[in-house]
Length: 328
Image 1 (cartoon, rainbow, N blue to C red):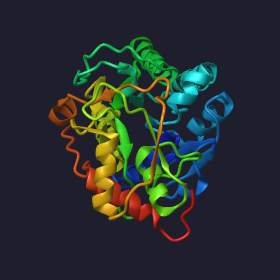
Image 2: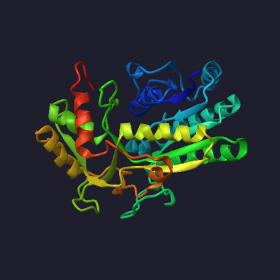
Image 3: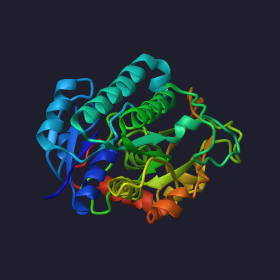
Image 4: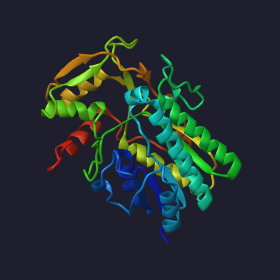
């Protein structure tokens, strides 16, 4: 029999791509999503449960019906700026929702969990290549809430034998090269789709937030990883747990940082179009530079990012945004 995997946030950007990857790997992904930021049309690769992590009864029912062998947990609020303005919402939704999920999983005897954390747990550590042993000092409520969830998972691992893999990943970009699913946030906040929208005239211009950071050109530097590479790592992390290899934390990034201006330069090459921009003030909670310095995922999981170059990520995102009927 095929093994069911409960995928929280399975109707969202990364979750939908993960469901496709899991189905291709022979699993049955069960997307559990409240559709607050996801979209039902993205659920194409397995069953769908419309439910909220704050609803313990809905979680219990999903575990009872599908008997998953593992959970892959993506569901979360993830806007840094919003988290600074309304931290209570992030603590209630992300932390309390995750606690409900972990408790329901343990109660159902589902003791394998892959958790999507974030490099935002490291905070702003100027000039530091971040690995799994780097101290975590989040500077926004989003990163702090994810760090707290990591602690919950580790506590439940110690108390109840909850096996877990935690991925701290960097900036996710790109889309399914077959254009079955892609990036379609409401509202959109990520650099590459906003840039493509500005080029296409779906918005008047791209706002570049801050040009006085301590980086070579004054704009923020980020490590970009293709969404297909990211979900490939999640499948590998799941398989790691199912063969009993134990609890582990992995960073997921390309190991190379690019500034906002460098991304804009790459887009001109891919699209042959100029990006209309306006300069804005820094956003509260944004770190100057976040770049992975880890090789653990490569050495232990055998993970090798294959599509995580700027030209490929931009081209795949562009193809998705040009799909007939696309709207944002």
